[in-house]
Length: 250
Image 1 (cartoon, rainbow, N blue to C red):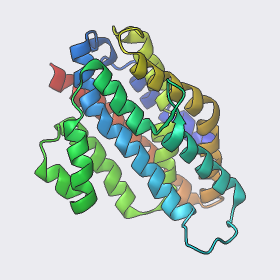
Image 2 (image 1 turned 45 degrees about the horizontal axis):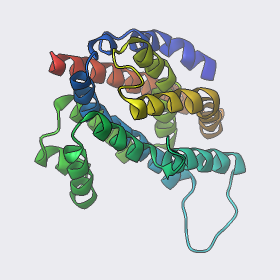
Image 3 (image 1 turned 180 degrees about the vertical axis):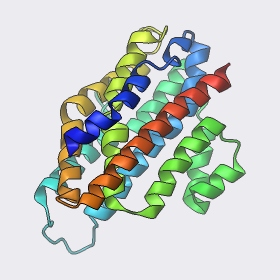
Image 4 (image 1 turned 90 degrees about the horizontal axis):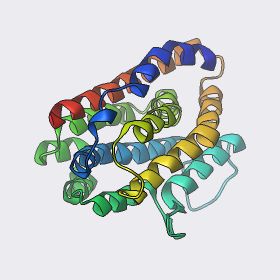
């Protein structure tokens, strides 16, 4: 079923690989504009991971053996990478905070995303989107994800995480590196962030997320059908996100 899903979503991945947005990022000003919107997708990714952890590795004060040690291994490994990866200077940092550092390095504003995080913690994501002046591109994308999280169907969350993030991010990010006009010397932390995700998602987390989805869906035909639908929806949401950023940039 994994291979069938890959074949079904391949045209959308090709669209993401060749999206015209990447070639529009030619100056630091362009990069700032992009990052101030894309940072919401970075937060979105971390939140999807939290949804997986909440469902698959619920915690209590009393430790008890996990139902599936392979699943526990995957969740713990990806959490280590996403929440405490090695920074460009050898310290440890979450990928979200690394992205904020990369934003500051090129002069992008982090005030809106920081305000959004604080507002969402207190009042929830939907209310924060209504209260704050979040760009429509970011608002549409993150709303789509949090609607999925609130549905709390673990096979759908895992499908979105696998095919909408882990398997597609290396494809998109490699094209960003190949096509943007910002060289590594001009934005070293941004390039480091992008290269790090190409490396760990492509070589490690992508295959692990496939195994996770297979473990969850097993032989349930309905779950696999909904996993495919979710994968397509997640990738189309990303493609729409890029197109909206490009439109806002214009």
